[in-house]
Length: 437
Image (cartoon, rainbow, N blue to C red):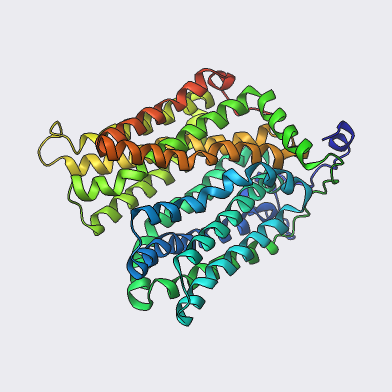
């Protein structure tokens, strides 16, 4: 990005978050200003729909097609593959195009992909290959929407409210894990897994409509003259030039590794080591969703009380302690009758710690990324942070296969605790308040 392009950017027209008013002069809360409330409402609905597809796709593969562990691993991997394949280029793409249009297009793409499943199922054409294609296309839509939304959010919310705004978005996703399992089970039982995915199609359309209804003018960004590869390199340069961004990116990557390593063996551990049935396993994930909501919404307040750097340092350690409790529940060291309480306490603590770091990190990335290159910076960070997810699954699965589920969970705890190293080794630890760019 040339200096001229960066300096000639017109500044966004922003209503002050806490003092915005409607046409009658009545003060509105920050979350209703500039269309953020519409974005949040659409994403809350879409998150529930996404849980339906998240559960229904693998269920169709197992029940209707007899897919084995290898095939299920492939289906899970293709959903995250776009972060590795196109993550760096998405950021450049987001900086060159209107971000809300990209978000709407991503919703439309995902809706069309998901719609193909019930259509093919009703026609008798559904195959495992189509399920993989659908997962991959949905993954493409996910990363484009994710980066575009993260880049757009600072135009809808003032700097002082970026952390709670990100926390509310992540809370809507977390709470969908609480509400969705029962709804999904009922839908699948009544109408079947493929037809139930029509709900997800509808929620994507609701999300697109909520974004289209935002009336706040989007900031104009002149198209850069540099080539795509030059823009990709510029994204790397901007990230590496700010050690705070390096710390946030490295720390979030460790969380992704730990999360996917633990999830690779978690259901096996709960079902085989502790003998939990499907209903009890579902309740454990409800506990995880509740903990995630607490961590996401409480991160800003905690940072204000004990400091931003301290919150970033302690969050992963709390999450790692939760994973240790999780593993302890399956050992002879667990007191008699305490296995289930330890599992639930571990799941809640793990989620609180991870989401406290992730929610605070999301707002800080937006504050630190230069507006004119926000898409490139965020795209580069998402490539690093989420591109390692398949590796985490491989680590957890390999350790679980060779040494057992408990060692795999303990290694996940070690990976999660190592997130704090990125805080200590960079200027993040010394931050008392949220940084400025």
